[in-house]
Figure 1 (cartoon, rainbow, N blue to C red):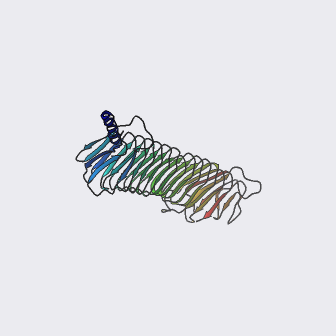
Figure 2: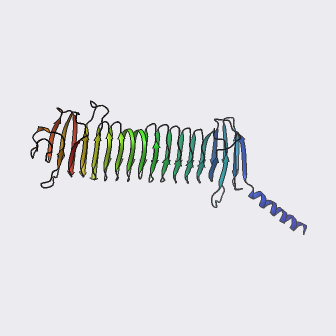
Figure 3: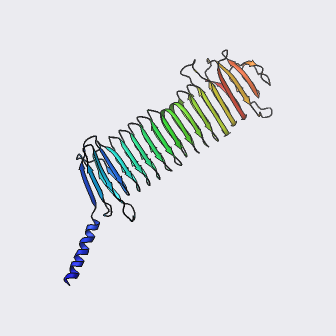
Length: 371
């Protein structure tokens, strides 16, 4: 009887021991770095800690946490349980004046506002972060990334999720194989490679490529964009523009420098040239396979215009110009004086000629208007 009681008491004691959470705590200096290496678990970081310390609690007795309390670096490392049932939450509390280097092999990462630099990596979950004052490198193999503003350079990568971020104080790199990319104002340059839509409010130099979907750049110093099947638009590009889409429109509401744009499928091209330097390089090469080409040009610019409609519709007005035209050589179908002319091909000099402007459509019309 006594043995049975001891057995029962021993079993009760063992059950309590197995359910006890793992806990670790270390002092951490302002500007120090917290390193977490979790074999498995959802990392939830509370950055409102009032003490200058880092502490972690794991609600699973099968997870053992080893701590290493260094002067400038605090590290928490865990093993992986043999069997995983559901999620394993990690509750981490730190002050916001530290750097974070977090890795989980299976789980998500959630972090509040932080003043330092961050590195977040997960092999199987999403990442959500508040405002990050320093630099950020956020990488996930199987989820989305959402962040507030980032003060320094930013690198966001996902194998198949959406990348959603606020303003970025430095340069930015975005990579996702099948997701959407959305970003606010970027003070530096931006590289965006996505599987779907790319949207950036403002940036310096932008290089954007997507397999299928629209590319929208509000304002940029320079743009190089390519879409496998979507529209490419910009409200204002302050420097050169180069763009190509396989099926969609290209629209530049205000272009300050040279433009090279092409649509290889169905799509129109619209460019309004508003140069900052009328004597700069303002050449254009606009080619639409099946669609219209429309350009607005400053009346005082010097240009040599070569316009071609490869397959003009019968008795349709295919090339229209609001400029008094002085042809470099007679067009194939003659010139209608003063305002409009119709031709399958026409060469015209503006203000004596200058910047080479090539406008071409296989099936559509070309319109040249005064800006």
